[in-house]
Length: 44
Figure (cartoon, rainbow, N blue to C red):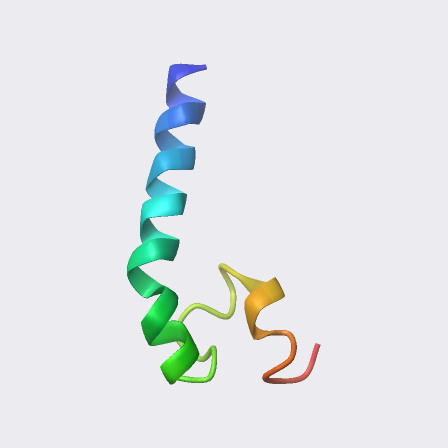
């Protein structure tokens, strides 16, 4: 349980840090980690 919470925290922190960059780059940087955000920008 503790490991799962740690992993979730890491993922959320990474998304927060890469969020603005992801939008500026058109989803090229974190496309694999956040397909929902990059779906409208490129092919599904």
